[in-house]
Length: 132
Image (cartoon, rainbow, N blue to C red; front, side):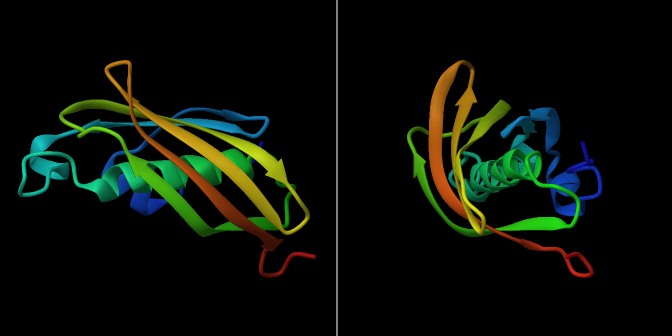
């Protein structure tokens, strides 16, 4: 399987960690830190959870793509269920449907064993520059 995430500077900057990836699934995590990820209201900025979901969803689809194909987010519907505080935030993403040009992916985010957010998105599938 082709690598995913290690070469992705944005994910590394935020502190994302690859837990598992393959067969249309991807689990990623981040250790949410007050000094690095919180907003002025004293909770994790919503963009942290959203970015983790978006990246894990891309990782899930990427695990199904052959060399020469890329994917990109078309749209994501994200639901924040409860606040995210300090500690480990984990996202589990799974491809629900993969067509030739568009895939649909679900994601669930957990902290301390509780569901804190969920997402569903559509991703484009296309030839990589220089690919077929």
